[in-house]
Length: 237
Image 1 (spheres, one colour):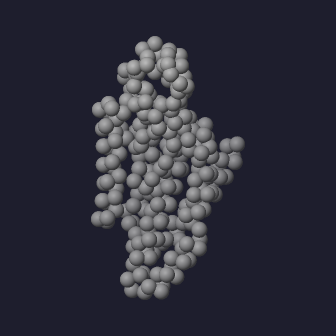
Image 2 (spheres, rainbow, N blue to C red):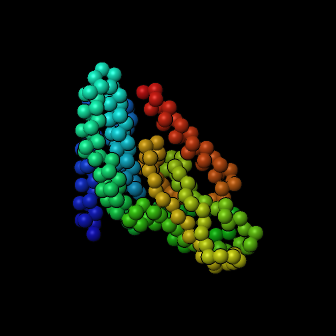
């Protein structure tokens, strides 16, 4: 199984390298491309964050090259874009690379914590399946009752620097009444984007908390600020 996963990864990363080479020579954001290439691959999510970052940087570089060519030679620009689209880079990445990288993560556990004060007991850390879906499970403690704001409980992923990365779905359990020992599950789909790939590459844990808590509000602000900073940097460089 491990050998098969390694073969998938080798093919997936070869595709990403090819995509980056196809965009060479443009006036894209060289800083973004360099940052993507430098992302670590020894974290919980392995090659996934770097592959996404490089793919997004390649797409941006191709778009920038097209815009540059269009200023001086519209016909050449059309030819470049036609050739680029003909390589089916986006389709191959979404249909081949991402599934292969997801498959390689199957069974990986993400350290999971409960915020203080929640009437929950964690039975299983968030664990990834072969499609980048992670699920955690647990039970309600004796402190839980029908007044427990269970629908407010959500999860937040954090990197090794303590920065919030993304939020997951709310809690799911089998009908009321809430009682001690009743099981619940939480889901978290790992959706990596260009602006948060660097944080996903350093994923450290997922914390389950109340979305009305200060910690959750701060996490949302951190996520939004990170996205804004990435977009503004992309415009200025």
